[in-house]
Length: 585
Image 1 (cartoon, rainbow, N blue to C red):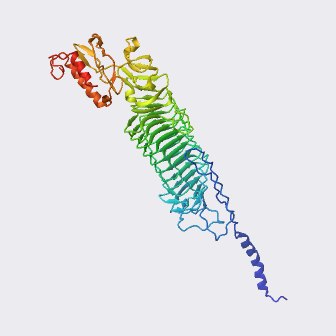
Image 2 (image 1 turned 30 degrees about the horizontal axis):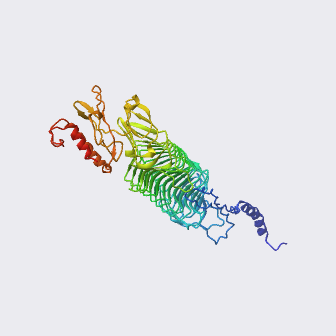
Image 3 (image 1 turned 90 degrees about the vertical axis):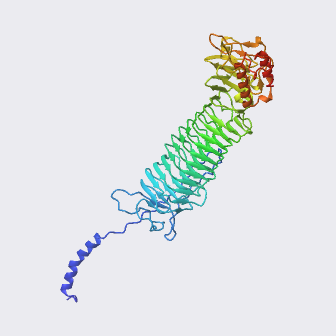
């Protein structure tokens, strides 16, 4: 007989099935998922062009499994999904526990890798010894909420890196001390970057090959290389940004169909730089106090500049490339050059309605360069200046055939011209008259002149009227004219200056040299004769005073006005006329 009571054995028999069922219902512990650390891709190297690029970043090796005791700042973050509990999804192995500041999904209180779509916010200032935030997903919004991300100035480290994804928005964050504050990888499209501060990096931002980006309302300052760098970007907008004290303010390399408008760029070696770029538009930008204000370099063509302001630059606008259109610019206080052309392909550009004022006395309003080492002389051919008053100019000895045009007519040189001087005096296009200064040997070339609706060929320097086209004759020595002046009911067209600064009317004029215009049409007449240079007339104000005296004299012709009766014979006549003009010598 068993030493155990029967009642105990019966209890054991009934208990065993229940214990087995409990064991089957209890959950078994799930294995922890393996870590999926973020890797840093190698961006393509910046092409070797000015400014000097940073070295190509190398790939960062994936970390091995880290013991729990070693913390790291890199976390992988996923956005909230529908029907998901409010918690942060991270890979647990090899990462330190979450900070207590991390309170909800999408909130970043440490450097992280974002791998799911959604909206993420930074909840505190972040510091990193590596790339801090990596976005490796489409459809992500990252809001910095005014917090900062700072690095340690190491190579290949970025404040924010975006992989080859699209529909990503980055805003309201301050980034400093990285190779690039924001790095957008090749293949990323539709990136919006706005209201960020990018300071004291090597590059404020780098956008690699991509399209349809929007870069607006950012501030990039004191970056050692470039504020906003766009490498082969197309169909994108760069607007209302401020860059200051970078080596290059805004740099577009190999870009096409981009719009750059409303930006303020100051204190750079190159303010707004285009390199091998075509079909772009820049309007309403303010580019002040740079070495080069706006520069088209290395075959940049078919771009349009409209309504930009360039003040206090060493060279306001520099052009290497053809078929660019430059309209309605306001250029002032240039230290050396207002409009500078360099490289042989700087041809067939159009400069229209551009105002140039207060260029330094030793500087030039227009300069066709030939001083760059190992570079060809700047091309001149086909460059057209429309309603753009230019004073001091230099055209290199290679020369070329530019076109000058205003509301009165056009002068299109058909033989290469060279030299320097004051273009407002050396090529004058006025109502009914074109004057090309014969005292400039480099301008004594053939030209096609359009004047008064007529087009004709000028054999060289001289003064031409609209009647030249109908065979009325040319006065290569110049014409003195002021309009209107009437003698005995006949219109005379008289100008004391002649064809350029440093000229005076004839020393002696006889009645046979007075050619009145026809009474029926009231057309201009001329008083012609030999022209003598006079250094006393180099001033425009002196020229105007002489012209006014001349006009007053002609109004008093035939009178007894003692103010103009220089020989005191009680009659203002031809003898007094010769006395008056002899005083101008």
